[in-house]
Image (cartoon, rainbow, N blue to C red; front, side, top):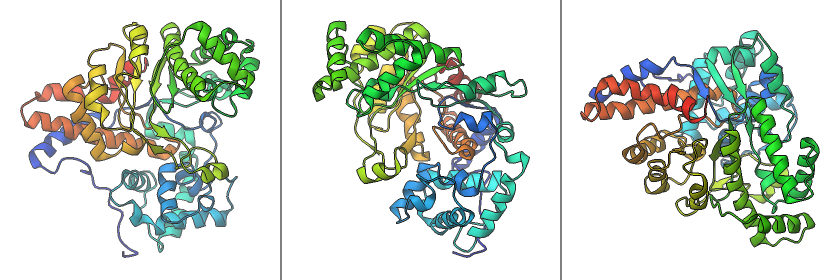
Amino acid sequence: MSATAALDVHPDRLLPADPSQRSVARRLYDSVKELPIISPHGHVPPQWIAEDIPFRDPTSLLITPDHYVNRMLHAHGASLADLGVGRGPLSEDDARAAFRILCSNWSAYRGTPVRYWLEDELGLIFGVTQRPSAETADAIYDQIAAKIATPQFRPRALMDAFDIAVMATTDDPCDDLSAHEALAQDASFTRRVVPTFRPDKYLDPALATWTADVDRLGEVSGVGTGDYAGYIGALENRRRYFVDHGAVSADHGVIDARTDILSEAEASRIFAAARAGSATAEETTAFRRHMLSEMARMSCDDGLVMTIHPGVRRNHHTPTHQTYGADVGCDIPIAVEYTDALRPLLNAYGTHPNLHLVLFTIDETVYSRELAPLAGFYPSVYVGVPWWFIDAPEAIQRFRSAVTETAGFSRTSGFIDDTRAFCSIPARHDMSRRLDAGYIAKLVTEHRLPEDEAFEAITDLVANNPRKVFKL
């Protein structure tokens, strides 16, 4: 590859190749490309925004926090430690060395959505014109470092530049939400950053830290968690705290979507056994599934949108998890079932007017068979857009084809970026807008949808669906 090869960010990227479809897709995309970004599910630390913390270096901005980037480099032999994972602030030499690893392995990302995001970030945000390579790595690093040293590239300035109207973070139920409170009280901050209630580790007695976490829940809530009733009260207390601090949703990352409902007596018995360390594996699994249904019951009471992200074997490589911790790229999808798994929850709460249940999957086989039919009947159910491994052009197109024929556009969530990599947010949303424009353009050119309705449909997907589904 030539060291002088250009970075090509084509204006028609991802739009249909067919000329008749492309012209319609351009018009549709142009109608929404400048609309504000609504990001109802993500993982950017709220402290970055509240304290307007300058980005330290190109590596800590673009590589270290982005497991999409890191996992591919790891697959090609790079050490996660050399990419800054699990370490404190990198020295200048180490940060530059990590950036060279990325640029030297640029070809590894051919055909991937990560390549699309990175090209978009480098070209459109930082003005990079050279294609990354071993020869250009230092020059690109210097160009980005110079940019992020200026006030225009601080987090709040980028919130404005990216036009992020709403950003949701993901927060521990015991967090004091001080960063969110500071933002809410800052009259100079005109964007909206809201917390998300993420209670996974408090709901699963099989986890080694569960007892200590439940103790902490009791301390923070002021509600004793020595028995099941107190435990439920403590969770309800913290959910109200989150609602009072602007939260609109509760997110659940679970291994399966099963929602069996226990009697109060049985739930109390298993809770006591788990607190005593004597619960069996079958009992802790039953309790976890019961608590997912309890979260739905609480959502009917307090109005938090309930999102479920099942079907991922977290920390698949135990040595990596032990060395670097969670969320570093070694999570692997598994098959998941929804129809029978969710039936107990939906029988109990599926027609409740206050429940919004957004169902995500990485198992594409369930879109047309299970999720679209569920969303096509239950008024509470919405299909979450592709995320994580299937947040990719072909998968997004398959999603639209699989879901729309049964559930239409209105029963889908609107795009979520689900990212810790702050500068990738506009690239991810732009990718979704282009692909949806292409899908809708196909309907127009096949005379299945009038063009005036096509403009309404794409506006709904970008602006109206996320506001409606996430009660914004």
